[in-house]
Image (cartoon, one colour):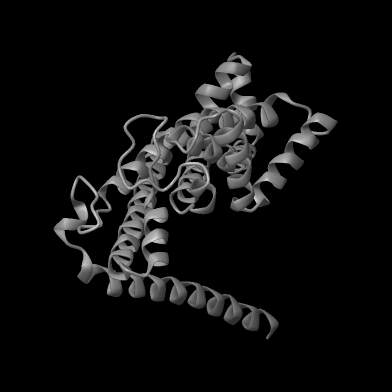
Length: 272
């Protein structure tokens, strides 16, 4: 009786989750799809076309640079914590406590820090470089923790088998453990990219809200999420804000689909 009740509760929770997601997608697509028009994809933003293309390209730039910097650092830290460091040492405990704390910090705090440090102290002004620097600090805990858990999930048998065949520590990590942990690492990177894509508060105070595509790393810009926020807060282009939300949803769906495809390929390659 108790197991049947728990089973029903699990089904209800799954149904509630799926229904919420379906309603969200339906609401955004229903309100935004009719307002997608060619003028929203003009190369240059004007007050007449309210083009989202510069913001879309800026989003790709910020996400790409943030992951390019944060991924090697986060994966390298995870390798150190899981394969080299003593898990009971005080230093490792401090690092893990710091990553867990940083992961729970509200994004507005990152924005305030980025504005005071990158924009004001380093005099980078509102720029892509300030936004990327803030985003890297913001997503590092996600990549570190997910990568560390991915390495832990590989099990001791792979390590022991590789070492028994004469492979060294470094070769075992990069030739055996890293490919096996790749799907979990990729999942963490996708979560990190999703946080950057949907971020507004942290980037508003560091990247800025310029409507044009940045000319260089020291120029300002705005991401799609910022573009949607500004349009909706002004109250003059609500329909275009819904259309921007559609582009955000489609971008997230594409990234998740690509990540799923990559994970399957990595698993298939690892099983051969």
